[in-house]
Image 1 (tube, rainbow, N blue to C red):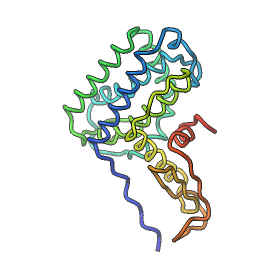
Image 2 (image 1 turned 45 degrees about the horizontal axis):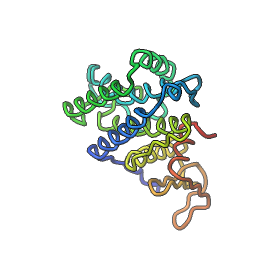
Image 3 (image 1 turned 120 degrees about the vertical axis):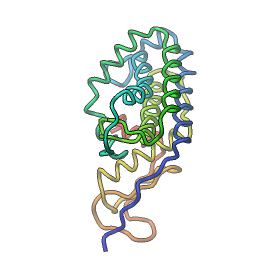
Image 4 (image 1 turned 135 degrees about the vertical axis):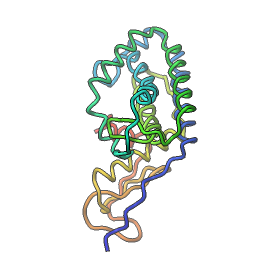
Length: 238
């Protein structure tokens, strides 16, 4: 018999919202401490400065506001696990918008405060079932908010890498959601059961075609910590 298909992982919308706002708050607190010299530092994202990266972090939440302003799709035709593979196509437009926002908002803390206010207002006004026209297809709002944990965790790590000693913490729930989404995406990209990828304490997935094990420790095991996994999945590490 073929193996039973796993149900998609479920995420609690209230916990996801709390995690997103907690991680965004961590970034905001750190941004208040940055000097003009630190904001002008280069990042590992091509020619982006720290200022432009901070503006892009705000875009993680303004994307929700923007998509809610679009007509609601008639039906859902995307999956949460499609999102990690769809975002690369938007890279050029995203970079241009980040540069524009960085230039338009010299007071980054005030800008991020307004971004957070609009995000919470929009979530209060719309149910999690409201469909959004994302680059991965039409997704429910609650699913799209899960993707915001990936954006925030990845770019928190980018900021920490760019500014010596910054050390912005990762909210545990945000890191857990980001880790799980990216691990599940790997299982979609490389389906199979020959290899077990473990990212304790948040995720375990089986992937890669080959001999399938049914009990005990699989023959091939890869294990790493959550931040290293996020860096690998997002292309920050080869």
